[in-house]
Amino acid sequence: MSAQSQISAERERVRLTAIALFMAIVQIAMLGALYSQTAPHPPLAVPPFAIAPMLSASIALCLVLGWLAAQGDKGAVKLIALPVILLALVSYGPQKYLDPAFPQIWIAVVPMQVATVALALMSYRPTARKSAEVASATA
Image (tube, rainbow, N blue to C red; front, side, top):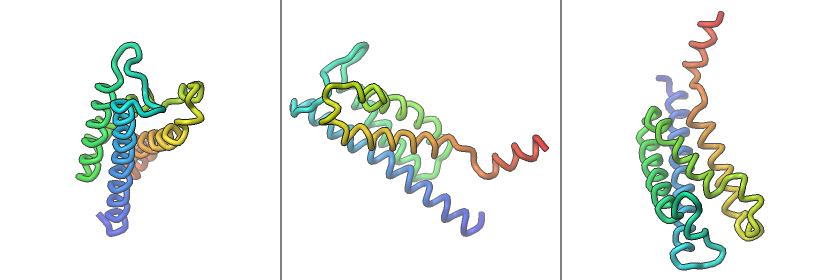
């Protein structure tokens, strides 16, 4: 591995770790708002589950994702990123634009959506080697 590709891989690990930690921190703050009933806070439950256990699972997955990203385990990152993304979209997806509380919660919703898209792009984009293999296979 060249020095340039090592630097690039390290930057990717740092970025993925930062995204995962950001997502965990926002959800920890929302869980705290829920427990303290500080407005605006998430509802206690939405069909088909209560919010606190869902946020707790999401926070745990974000922390695991951050640790795996820091270790450079791309396969595990791909595996864990999907549930992280899906759980984030439950709380911060595009449906939040229709929420009456959106003027108060946009400051959490919009950055979480950006982080979710960034996580998806970084986790599932083809690597340069894979792209070269596909290109040579189709030529």
